[in-house]
Length: 370
Image (cartoon, rainbow, N blue to C red; front, side, top):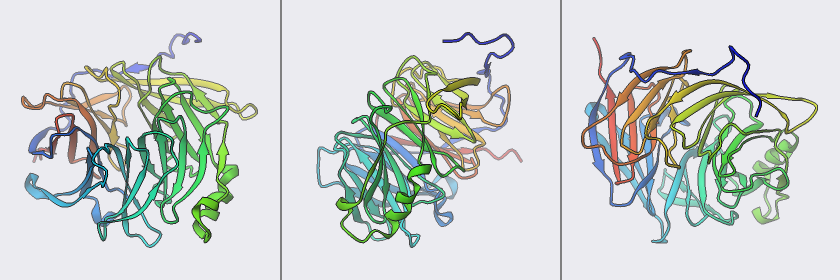
């Protein structure tokens, strides 16, 4: 690894909260006994910005955040397989705009649930092992991408049930893929990371005709000419251990491993030689007691702040618009002691949810300082 030139060291944020905003617990809900691995607000459909979903065990549950800290249960879907353990869920939608929930986990089967009629719209088999993360393409919300223990990332069309692309092979991940994310504005680009300690950036540009074709395909999904994308356009070795969450921030990437910090960095690609390039590490956001894997961070809709939990049940809310990084708030409650696997920040950042290893959902609301 090249040494960082003097004056180019990453800026590390201070753990003294700025008190810019204050949050208080307005609700806690014991969903069940099994660990909750994911919680996610619906940012796809403006009618349902206050609706969120959780997964734990073989259950997907849909809730609504109401005024005064109220959390209303809207729907619950229980998988037919009692042994299933969902690890991830994402909001998507059909081409007609009806909301879908896409969930996956231990069994490696993706369930697309039509939350309009609470029925299974489609089930996708294809991954050879469990699914660690599913994300939706916000610019085309019928497209989802899945990251799997089978060392591959797959692109799916939830409307037609087609597996369009498989990102794996010669230049692919060499161990479980733990996280994947679509670029917010460049529709062709995704980033994935995993247990091989790398972050890989992939381009779908030359395969885009197949993406278009997946919307009009009328034959059996199994007959679709699924393509392998074997070579990423960029590989970054930022971390020396498992990388379990990566998210785009414009053209930069925020990623985390098990070393108590989130790292903001810029991939600098060489146009002539794909796969090569350099990395500029810009900022570091410390997160104490965040040294176990499978803890994911989340943003509000406008990428203003990132929230992350730790194994002690605390939440750190970092400002993403400042340099050096500013800690907006550290949220802790005497009864929140269990590891927080994922957080969800509401559309405007006024509500923060956390889902925990002990099956509890915590709701924090901003305290109006009027």
